[in-house]
Length: 448
Image (tube, rainbow, N blue to C red):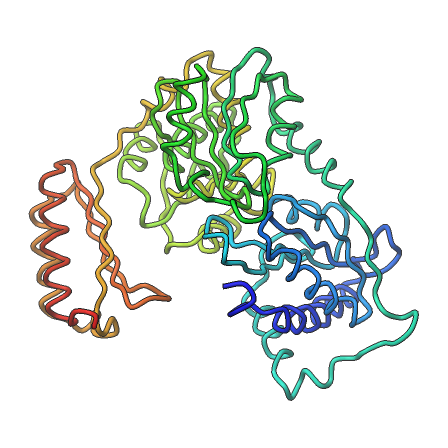
């Protein structure tokens, strides 16, 4: 929670440590001299009230090391990634808690290439936050401190880049979008209007306390109703920092990240731009995606849950399309992180090029019934060694058949075991999920 767990003191300390590490790396690589004639870090934020507090503290920490800040203001997270690399910054920082509640906030960094920092760089920053090293960080005085460069006008560069990623104009197309009272509220409507679309905008009046509240990608029912009410041909719903997209067709049916991957993979293959003839997704992606891709001769590679793992697989093997069911989709030819507005553009561009309604494109993938259950337990560390759980998983897999899947894993942050059951028969899926949850509670102990 902002100002409780993530305090301004912590943000200041992080700013100093990160600037020290990242500026030294930039100077060593001799590639970070930008418009200001020196090393600088781009800083963006979403619309949360706590953004003012944390932005001030983070920037103060960066400036205190003698590194300048390009202050971008309210901007989508992928905009920070793009502007960091296109403006030759030493790094980029985004203050946002994405789709989380308004009371939360966080800080993430990008390297000069626009990618999230490597683990080794994050570890080095963490080391310099410890007291032994913290006291050794230089503190230049007087005119040698960093300066703030107001960079809100640079966001236009990101808008221009986005519009250049599509092949067609959207003249006459009626687009309904939900900006979640977040970072997309100015950029997303501007991009689509500049391409000729008629845009109906919901939740584009952020007040600092309404981001993600009953709106955005975590509340798809809002955009579903709006598309039907306004007669839209497509609905686009972003999260608080605009790095993910949930779409809706003209009939009010939801398209998640799996649908987007299935649709866009076909377009890229047709244009001979699907490098490696492969899409990357996580173990949580629906089996319907794998079947849909297989029908057109495209392979699916699965990774652990998290966009970091998707990106690592893509970079390692030269793949250009990947993402998560949540709507976090990566078009690596265009940006170095998931980008909800970019994803919306690629989806709508595909729709326009096909001259078919989005409902017809959606039909290329049929979702398998999938049940997700979070089981709160006393001791999740006992999961791997539990014979009863292994036996319950075996029984479920046998009952589901070769087209079914079972995934049981401990949460990385909570006392939970997450259960995913998927298969062609919804009743069997529900029954298997309930049985697994009961066995896990008994074997690992119910949470107090």
